Image (cartoon, rainbow, N blue to C red; front, side):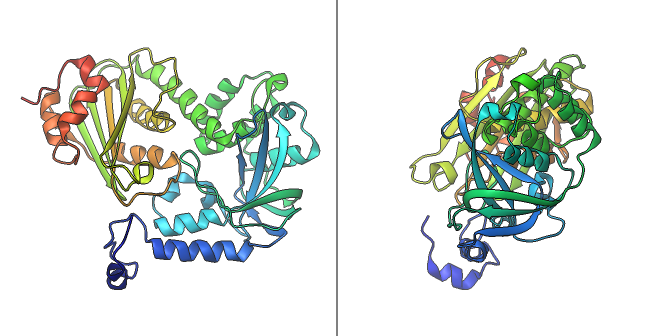
Amino acid sequence: MRINPSLCIKCRGEYNLCGLAYCPVLSELRARQVISRVKGLSEVDGSSPPSVFVGRMGYPRVRVYPATPPVHGDTRYLEEPSTWLCMDLNEFISSRLSMVRGSMEFRVDDARNPPRSLHEVQVMALSSGPVDSELILSKPLRGNPLLTEQSPPFGPSAPLKELRISTLPPPPRIVDKVHGDTDLRASEAVVMLYEHGIDVNHIARLLSIGALGVGRRRRLVPTRWSITAVDKQVSDVLVRRIRGYPLIDEVRVYVREFRNNLFLGILVPHTWLYEWGEAWWPGSTWNLWGGDVGLELDGEGYRGRDEYPEIGGCYYAARIAVAEALNAMRRQAAVILWREVYPGFNLPVGVWFVRENVRAMFKGPYMRFDTVDEALRYAGKFLRLPIERWVSRSFVLRRLRVGGLT
């Protein structure tokens, strides 16, 4: 996206004149400052939130990356998605890029009987708070941060010679319990942890590092897979409960506008149906060079779905958020969730962004309507894509046989 330089002189990072969700000048400067502090280092000493990333390239041999910023103190916010929405996007990016990674290679089934180096990473991942740790690297760090659609950003990495841990807070009692239960299936452990108040981000980390499941079946799980697996497994349980609740008694429309994104939710009195749709404008993250808005949508019926949605992990990140909301209401509904992503939102920050925004949306105000068509006409006032395009692709509206907008 080309920016008129005169806008930068007028704006100076204050007024968002370029239309981007962040200031590219400030963001680049902060990223350079962060990376310059660690670039070339062979040792990094700090407090890991804790944080671990497991790659997927080369599977069933994968790289495991324990991560830490080069600072000591309470760094838990670096692994708490619920706090990231309150952060300035420039601050979020620069703080996450401070997460230096050391890489080690293992077979995925090494989690069953982990060597000492992997065991230390597992112990760190179990912790309830920041772990004072030191990464001894076999090569100096280079400026190669990690940006993906599934996980939050990470800083540069280098091969890890040794991980030294000096202060290790004990794990939460329930985490210690499920980790030690080698007869408990991973899916059961995930749900048990969630129901005891462990955040899905923490659960995904435990699943990823091979700390859950039947002992002889434990394995390392790439982070992008573990995040989606936890969102899916937890929301599956919540949806089964939802199907036993009475129907919601009105049509509701929720709207949330946030950082060049529009999130819109419609709840309809009906047995469980669900859809997630995304419209990406030219100049947004996954449509940087397109000439038209790219629209993707996927959904499921009352009994769910068997195949993985083509739209990706955001499908389940949004699904868990709305399932939590309906469970809190003790109500059942057909659910329409649409997201529009506008020019200027052009950095992949992870599926947490969808999960936390949809959670926030359903905690906010809503408008009530007697019919779906009335709700759609109201929704059309906020959507930039013509409502007819959404309606023509909608899985739920097709099932409900409504949406004529007459």
